[in-house]
Image (cartoon, rainbow, N blue to C red; front, top):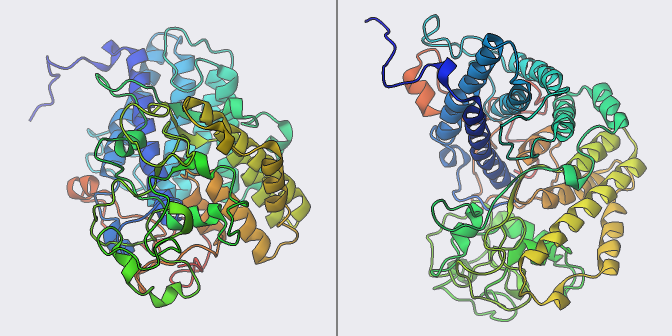
Length: 527
């Protein structure tokens, strides 16, 4: 049949470039949420439901990401390019931003999926069924787009475009592009390039330059609040389970009086109860609200706290697939950071749509504190533990200051529960002081604090974990044999069904080109 232009659809040259850029940014944020969530689940920063990795992440896991990426990001970038060429320029800011987003998206797709269509994509007349490009080739293409982005941003004017991230500040966009080059270099092992940019100082080095999406407080038409606030701050209680591993790490189980808690714990989590069944406050347990409190721990949890924690921190272990009990009013909810909820001041309970920060949180994507941990990784891998400890100290300092600033969103909080400056400085000194050599202990200390710092925006945790294997202190899966830890995910079903040139994987053991660690199940060690 002839391919005719639909009278009901505008042609590319008629599209508003400002609206195209809006679409690119919104699609990117939605994708970032998915990448952050899946990465956090696998690395125990968030709770993962389901005991078998392969069954947990089926072929529909990235359907939405895939469709948005090709139709709302890549296709619209091409249209903006065509408009800019046709009009002799004028859309340099649009292209600088969209090329940066495109490059970051290409890297994330490779990181999670491996080979993807690129060279034959978005050309249905010539390539109705595009073939897969080698993942290393796609990564190189992403790097080239970052150079293009910087060139477009140089001297660009925002014009009438809406910038959801930096409000038209091209200097901050350039810092982001340089930071993405650092990420590319770190992932591929090009440490010379990484260090060159680090030495320049022109990257995301201050929290005021953080790459994040800011949510609002509006409830209806449309709801602009943080999605985790919407999920947990309801009249029917909380709906998200928090990671037992992360809460225990931050609680510091070795400190019976809680004095050594991570200074961020009351900002990250809001407890609805002061006692968890099975803990010392209720050793007999409660089969109705927490069935595992009446069960023996799995053998692989020998010596590891299972099911419950002290002081009302109520979550779930990695892979727990038990049914949902009536614990919506007792499980631990998200706090004031990053979801804009309540600060935990021992008030316990009272969740509804009108409390705390009203959902005025953020979706962290790349923060200055994360970059400090990248630099710490490079330093420790290069045999410089003193430098690594210094970068961890810098990352923790930025992270805790940023997290504490969110406390002001909860105007009714009892500020006496906020950590003082001495508590914060002692904590930072203690954690950074654990990095003394290049042993597993030092790597675990670095990795644990990196993972805690990434709470809410853990998209890079998955890469770090596959790249280094740390921390080895992660809780095991509740299932003794959960299968091979996913080195990549299955291809999206929307592409496999429609494209005969994409064959679905039969397992999740395929390794990305930069993943040179041993195959599973021996690696990562904690799995």
